[in-house]
Image (tube, rainbow, N blue to C red; front, side, top):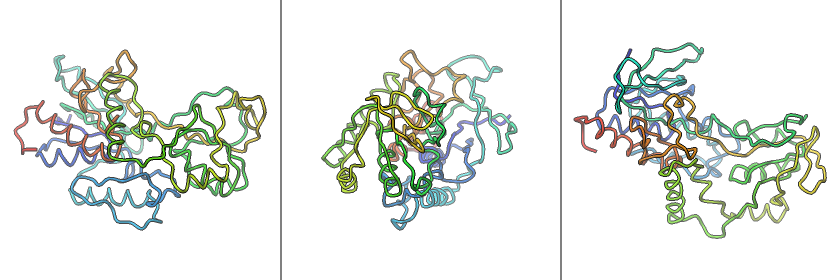
Amino acid sequence: MRALDAVVIGAGQAGLSAAHHLQRRGVRQVAVLDAEDGPGGAWRHRWDSLTMATVNGIRELPDMPVPEADDATPANIAVPDYFARFEERRGLDVQRPVRVTRVEDDPSAPPGPWQPLLVHSVGADGRELPVLRTRAVLNATGTWTRPFVPAVPGAESFRGRQLHTAEYVAAEEFAGQHVGIVGGGISALGHLQEIAEVGQTSWYTRREPVLREREFTEEAGREAVAGVWDAVREGRPVGSVVSHTGLVWTPALRRAAQRGILERRPMPRRILPGGVLESDGTRTALDAILWATGFRHELRHLRPLRLVGPLGGIAMDGTAVAADPRIHLVGHGPGASTIGANRAGRAAVNRLVKDLDLELAPA
């Protein structure tokens, strides 16, 4: 069994930042595991129409300029290429595809606050890989693998196509169709505008969306991040940073509003085989339902450690789990934004080096 100081799970922005800072501080006994077939994290799966001109902000990886790409280049090509060049330039040894299935206490070691951890994983063929024994885990698994679809009565009876943002490829798939789009975030607005060009749309949200007039400033960003920090410190379930920032009017959205595309409807009472029963009792025929309803943090492999507290979330002390400093959640809560992911990777490594009392290079 290989013994390590740290295992990084996930090689998206937060995982690469953590791996970089571990390398920079001179922590040598490290494994970086990633479930994807190649570099890029969740960016590998973004829909084709999300280009570098329309993507909602990309921050540079540590000490490496933001990728220079044509505005028309799909983000699912430009960003993975940027991540690949970062891995190569830094000489990071990312093991992939490796999917972590379980992290647990090492039963052969005495119980205690720094009892070693065992990391179980499988390879591309589903076979179990050698177990890793580590002093700490820097978890950067993100949310993309846990799409969330709310429960709506009758959903199982719908005869048309149902899909989540995670499965969306391009609007052309829905040419000539009437598509119900559910969700009040940036992805839902993007889908609405695209699909309305080739078909008909109806927009459903639980609450009336609020679009702000003012531009999104650094101050507004800090306020949003502070709200997320409050949630993770208290151990409440946490949404994305974007869910705290709200939506901002853009010229494209104003044009969409003028065309009637942004006429929001309350959530349907029920989904029917051929459409939905609206909140007012009328029926609307639909060919497809697109759930742009967000994601949940992928932390199921950490369940054996029982990190979830009485409020339904994981209480955090910085990037570390308050009740278990062996576990750092990077790319979680405030670290879920691209700028937050970079900071979280560095903060986690600095804290870990101190906790493990490693004699290494200065921060």
